[in-house]
Length: 423
Image 1 (cartoon, rainbow, N blue to C red):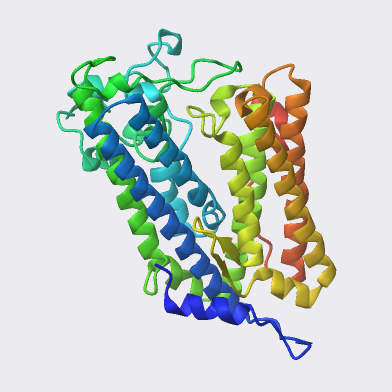
Image 2: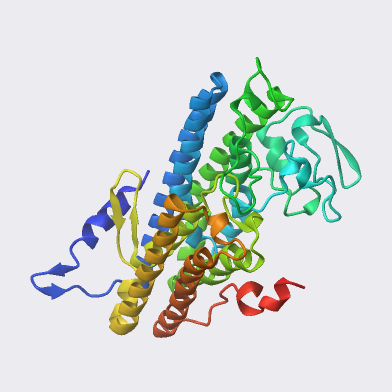
């Protein structure tokens, strides 16, 4: 729940102009404090929608059917909307960055969790757990040691299985593990169609896929763990939370953190690792929400999240809006031209992302757009990438305008050294 302090901030922000005179720009302290309020609001909504997902999963497991499975999928898709808007808080905030891999890590070697198609292969030189299939196995070998996997619990998933063997591809928890369990593998390559797991994989009376009781336990435990992890992050942004306290220690450093998050998500992470890399490789395995074909929405809401942070605004799932002192206010006071330029570029990027999403909903999915030889689809994705790169240049101008220290904005070989991608 948003603190009363935030509500007062929202009310104050609606009165920036009084008696025909523009109000003075806010202080760095006010901007950073409101940024923390926005983070708390967005993570709180992520938690609320995760709890709705948990309830939908419980209803599905209580009565497995195509209808209840579809409802759980819809709840997962809804949960992605606020969460993706939190990603601009990741870079620069060490507490968030250290935690993020527990809830949104990808891509994952799904053979760690459950059965996979034979086309997936049976082994990997890089991952001894590539096809460990914990759902079918009560004992695992991790780093040469025997591990008891009899009970699939949140503690086992988060404490033992996730990134087992210190291998990042062993993603056992978070949104994408749940996505895989609900949708199953997408075996369509760059052809049409998402994952198509039968609801009977969770039906004890007409079990398909084998080990339905353990699959049910995994889905229930993974969803419960997602809620617990999000509760932790909401608390981190609360009045006495560690992330808020760390950010507010030095407001000028806090401004650098804000712009680092915007720039790094915009450039290295989203434009580079999540989009350009998949486009270069024409590889559907490089799409973010690869089982559900929801990648277009994840990318769109990442872009919206970047704009939210700059404007100090966030529209909640119920349609209400949280607003307050923003980096935009500070930049506009120093150089209105830079502020206008950056706001325009943020809008352009979102329009390009919306065009990509509209194509996904009417023509072809994102994994088809990045397919080799798809000139038109490739161009739609590249236009969104270009928008992200262009807005990053203006984010850097905003940093200079505010006379902040040079930021360490995340890069990506796919943008900075494309030849390295193919080596």
